[in-house]
Amino acid sequence: MPDALEPASSGRAQCRGCGRAISKGELRFGEALPSAYREGESVFWFHAYCAACMRPEKVLALLASRTDEISERAELEGAARLGITHERLSRLCRAERASSGRAACRQCRELIEKGAWRLALQIFEEGRFQPSGFVHPRCAAAYFGTTELTDRLRRLSGELREADLAELAESLCARPGLAKTAVEDEAGKARSG
Ligand SMILES: [Zn+2]
Ligand SMILES: [Zn+2]
Image 1 (cartoon, rainbow, N blue to C red):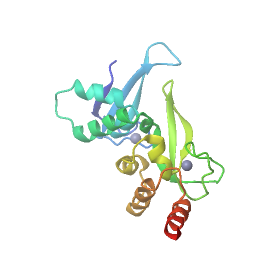
Image 2 (image 1 turned 135 degrees about the horizontal axis):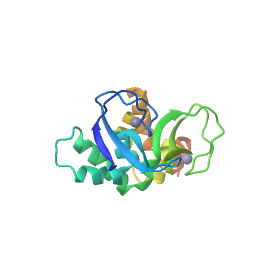
Image 3 (image 1 turned 90 degrees about the horizontal axis):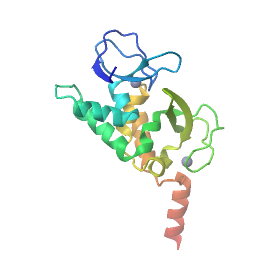
Image 4 (image 1 turned 180 degrees about the vertical axis):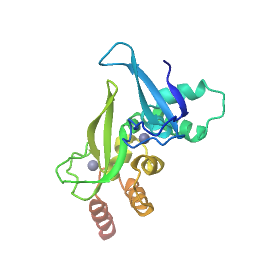
């Protein structure tokens, strides 16, 4: 079976990418992969936007092969193109507050403080997403090669408030790899001499 892009016929499937339900009628992407457990293929369903973010090559190829009207086509193409330009973007799955202070940032290797924002990563292997660590928002530019993450975070993270997104957007644009205090220290030093 080829990959599919269609309105969901029921509200029962769960998105492989973000883990939330796909509502009935919502545009979904179905990726057919060889089954690990039996002969033939299994279909993995995603919200169309999650798939554009996390499986960009496949979504772009499918969109190119379709001439019919697809809701959100421009948005899906945009997200997929950005993901192809910046390959690591397909690993981004959500922004969240760190539940412990034990995880180190994959970019700068420093611990991410408990309660601080972190960007969760996952890697797609053998039809499954595996958690793959975290990066500081301030390290996102260095890690992903872009700070154009706000649209993705809004759509992928689900329950973020606008105030959270504003805070995240600001820390995404901080100097990569440097804590805010380090930036301020440097600015202070520059001023004093
Ligand atoms: Zn999703
Ligand atoms: Zn970092």
